[in-house]
Length: 303
Picture 1 (cartoon, rainbow, N blue to C red):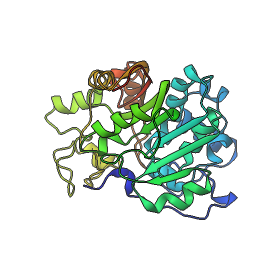
Picture 2: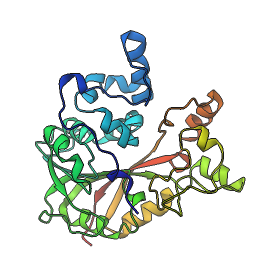
Picture 3: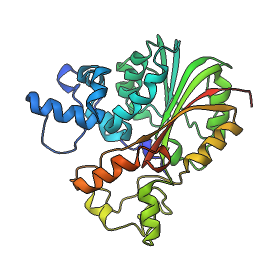
Picture 4: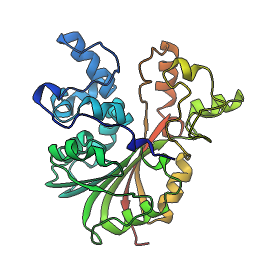
């Protein structure tokens, strides 16, 4: 089954006019004071995040290709809120596994002032655009192949929205431990099997959207997903985990949890009711109930 992060092909030549983050996949642009505020709310989730970020910091590097491929870009505020806890960490070398077109990778590299940043992806079509953003790109299958770096080379390794597309995560976690220095940082994000939404749809007898049994059709999901832009097309999500299971898995591979956060990604091109947003906002205060989760950890031992 083809992984989700290997599907999208974007423009290779990036001019200043193309460095615009088109998160909403429609013809409506963001312009003027009201449009900028809408973009900020969509990206950062709250006004407090504006103290940390500016629209230009992110849109400087992200393109429509990044936005189409990266769910994380629609909830950057949740990401930054978590990373603020380690903003002063010494990060000279950074690796992003599943870097895609490189916009988010470059943003994180600047967030931590990393001087050397690498990206790994399985899709060769991303190379030109990612390299134009300054990434050193390596094309390989991280699910099965060793990472082409020496032991303890990186200070920070990120892997956002990739693990749920893999049949097995053992190789990637083992290799992450090997190439990350002692006390180095790792950041992962995944769909949350134990989210409040998955618990609700299971109670109603439906299949969680994040677990697919076919590469051709999405079956058993609630009809609301079709109305919410999910349709019946599989996204490549083979499995996912609860936050408890992921923490235990990371402990097995020599990592210690520093922080856990919830993510509230936007639904693609849809209008979600105010009641849903309120419930999502309140329940996501507990990361174990968020629709997606962010795991921030540190290497505590060798495997």
